[in-house]
Image (cartoon, rainbow, N blue to C red; front, side):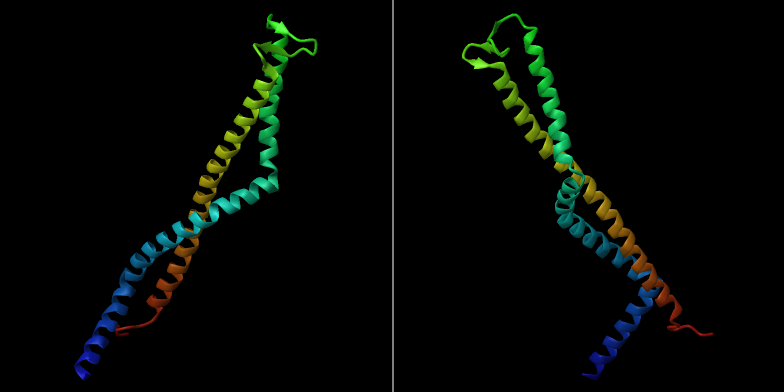
Length: 155
C-alpha cells in the first residue's frame, strides 16, 4: 500500500512538472478544440434563426424573389400568344401567372433554406473562433499560474 502511494506521488509530481513545461497547453488545446466545435455546432442554427428573425432576413429574401416573379409576370404581355382579357398569358389550360407564382414560391423556399444553411455555417465559424479564443485565454492563465508556482526549483 505504501509503495503504491509513493508511486502515485511520483506520478503526480511528474505530471505537475510536465504540466509546467507545456503539457497543460497541449492537452488543453485539444480539449478546447473539441469543446469549441461542440458548442459552435449546437448553437449555430438557433442563433442564426434568431438573427434571421431579428433582421427580418426571410421577408427581404421573399420580397427580392417575388420582385423577380413580378418582373417575369410583367413580361408575359410582350409574348404574342393566347392572352386573356385580364392580361394573363395561357399556354394550354395553365396560366403563366400561376406558373410564375408557383415557381416564385418554390424559389423562395429554396433560397430561404440555402440562406439559413449558409448563415448557420458562418455563425458556426464565428462561434468556434470565439470559443477557441476564450479557451486559449483560460489556458494561458492556467499556464502562467503554474509557471509562478516554484515546484522543484531552487532559488
